[in-house]
Length: 425
Image (cartoon, rainbow, N blue to C red; front, side, top):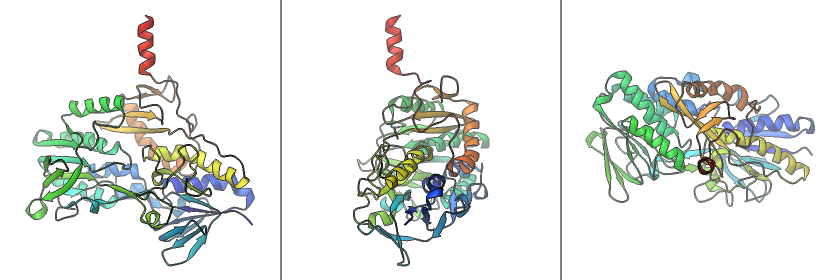
């Protein structure tokens, strides 16, 4: 019997994996089924631009089913749970989809209700998130009305999707307010649970320096425990577990994230947050040998970002083929991630890193290329061009010429190497 492959989620990871597997297994008669609750594929990097009027829903939403190659079956359905003991996905209507291989690409879900008070009277009035399309559209309308006061960008907790996006929002807000001529009437503050602007020291210093240059106040190690709104929900106060308070007139919040609800409902499939325990090198889950996971659905110690999913995809698809053939899996994923970071005024910087190597200055993908950890017009253009690559290269599961799964070492300036060079001289 031909292999039955079921993929949960038709976002970035599920779509590119399905298309890669179709090409790899086309001659074997494998049956590939992708399941998701709706037929709206959102280009999530585009959500960042919506609040500032730089793009709209019509530019970043396409049918999920149309991103899948013809023979791939698309099933629009909710999922109740996965029965890993019986190798069956139980659908929302009680139907069942049996599998020989399961790939969990269920992403991460926003959980604003987990923060006390956040979804109270100010939710959608003075507090918004740009991490989903309705929130980003509503925040755009709020920013158009905003004429001064305290604009606070708050990361409630980690992990989150695209950890650099809150910083990008700060940088773009600075640009946007300058364009409107009201920057001097706005106190702009970035509030994060991290001990710096970013998780990695070199990048954190560079990004923290940019915040300072742009007059964005940085508040660190702030673990938001409660949001209290003023009467009518027009502004309010963030309160940390340690008692510190940050008032706001307009709040752009990145709520806590969990895995998909059905992962948490599936005995043995997910951890306490609903993410799938996954081998960091092979992308095979640790819960069952015929279960794999990709992208935001995993518990891996790597950014929940589209580039991560792209780099994981080649290794994952190859390992599914190896698993079906009874061969040893390839431990080839090295945690590679890279991100363009919009810094406003038509500039951006680029970071590239993996499990072992933090973001460093230099160039990508080699000694001659895009500058790393340095603002440039070229990086801004790269960010804009990526949307075309997303729809036409990444989702179809094609490789980007010159950019492989593994992080390139050439072109990066390692602090240890620079110190050694200074000692030699």
